[in-house]
Image 1: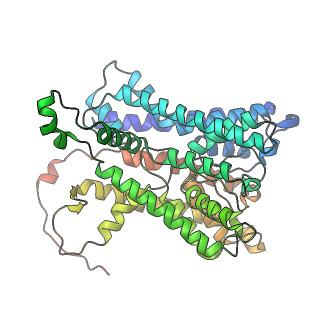
Image 2: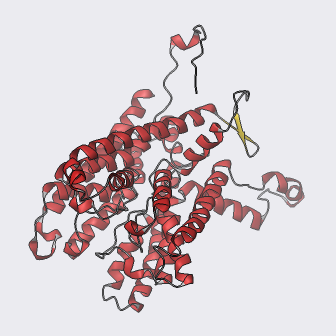
Image 3: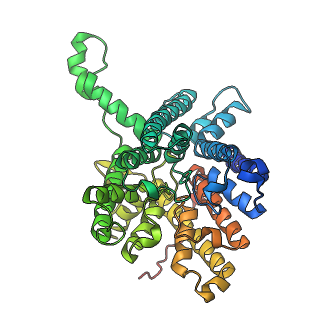
Amino acid sequence: MSFKLQSANSRLFAYFIFLAITGTFLFLCPFSYKGGQWAAPEDALFMAVSAICVTGLSVLDMAVFSRAGMIVLMLLVEAGGLGLVTFFSIYLAMPSKKVSYVDKKLIREFFTDESKINIHRLLFRIVGTTLIIQTVGAILLSVFLYRTGEQNNIFYGVFLSITSFCNAGFAPYSDNLQQFSVNVPVCLTICFLIVAGGIGFTVMADTAGTIKSKMTGSQGKGRKKKKEEGQSRKKRLSLHSRVVLLMTGILVGGGCTFFLITEWNNAFSGLPAGKKIVNALLQSITLRTAGFETVAQSDFTPASYVISLLFMLTGGNPGSMAGGIKTTTLFLVICYSFRSSEDKGEMSLMGRDISQSSVDKAIGILVKAMSLLLIATIALCFSERAALRAGAFSISDLIFETVSAFTTTGLSRGITSELTALSKIILSAAMFAGRTGITAMVLRPGKARKIESLSEFPHEDILVG
């Protein structure tokens, strides 16, 4: 069992590496650029990794890409955003015709908490939901862009719908989405697509099932039993879904309020009151690893800078297109940190006991993520020491860039294209680690119980605090 799961993780890395190599090759080809331009190898690698990791950071002006280049970028984003679904589909189809217990456990670790479910039907449902939402988004954006006079409204609508739902911050414009800061329909559609892509397929299905159950009542057979069984069989939201929806509401609502207060007379000063609310909403949502911006990040206050780092680190929800450590991870760590030393047994939340293994996994993900961020930041400071000495940009700019890359957010304070070749490679590695590394942590099974674990060693305390 352990070998198969480790093999699955290896295949996951191999899948993304294959996409990175393919994307790099395509971005080295002249047909990807207007006028047959060539991109430096490190730039081609950076763009490919940013696309498959659904990050959105770009070292090249989007205006240099040809229609073919933008199609390549769009397909890489789709392949990266649906990468886990595609990977699992291939993984299940390769060695055996039957879905083994190990395979089911592997997919449940990421997509669902149901013990009995048809895995193939689940994957089909995820792909179908994705295509439906992206199609609706593309139609709406095409109409709204047409009203602005955009001649490429259909293609750009499809492009933005895919990159929004996949939580990648690529936009077909040099200024990202800053020209649409006063266009409410475009901003709200982008917000909807980002939230839909970052909410998680498990929560979507659970919420839809709960609503359907409450509308139709009991599904019990027989009219006599229907009344008696209705209450017991009525579906309710799982603890996971309740935590996700709670955290999403707090982050979106709290972030929007915070940015309105801090940026009302600063970054949003030139906007009407209603447009300020829309831009604050978009800012609080896009920080959850989407990477679009209607207002330049360098215009925000230091207080917003700090909150932005926290939002980017948190990211979206498990089983979604978003990156970051995930909302549920942060929720468990915060709840666990408020437990006193006298609390015994498993942690209880919302009338449910949380297994210690879930808490341990959440703490492990946070610590490992912070460690990787620290290493990447130090490496970036080393590679950019000349620019730091010259005052070209500050350490806060590098920290923002590193967190944005690792959490696959894609926002920048305007220094990405000015980085050295070594820094671009470091950030590419950070994006790859943020996309595949955290997923591997989630999918990693508990180690087999060793004989030594059956025995106990003498207890001894370590002074803390």
